[in-house]
Length: 255
Image (cartoon, rainbow, N blue to C red; front, side, top):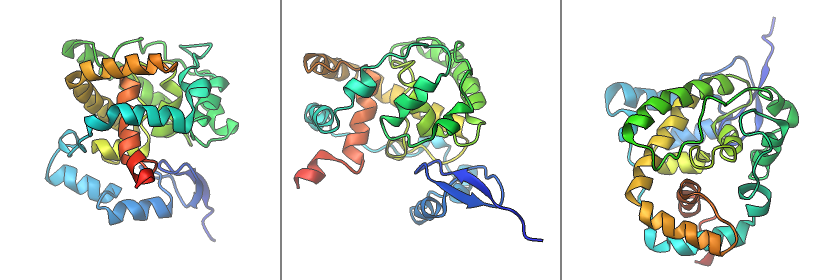
């Protein structure tokens, strides 16, 4: 008797696909093949972790800070997402609601209300309104495990992946939780693996980079405020990686 297939949601592209069983890392065939060709498939990543460097030592791409101001302006003008996403404060900051899913979809989370409904009602009250780039190292060590535990609970639901969750939660904790989509994760050198650990690894790397460049980020935040679209330093840092290393890079468009 043939084994029945189940529908999974790809963690990278967000599309549904058929499989015979749940997987540790749920990827559609096209995305899985793309990662394998880059030497970044789940099996390859596990071999590297077992044999060579821990994930926090994977190389991070170097941002061009000379482009940062122009790239920020380009993002604000090209995508016009501030009124529908970055400028929106959710009504409930401690409880997952339907509104959070709709907000995530304004920046291409591409998920149905049914998928998001699996975590509606879950609490993130344990996660404080902390500032990732400004809290001390000792505070971050304490908070990190609390955040990871909350992520583990939310990510156990089918269809809820790293990008979808962080696109929603960033608006609840804009100083703490970055948008961790596939472009940002790859640019920062975050390997495939456990979903909660990938978000924490992304936060670790952005924290290190952001603290080093905090003065520049403060200037860019002032610029965003001047342009009528004030964002946190963390959001600006994350979206600069997205602009410079993603498919909509400004210089790629200008030739």
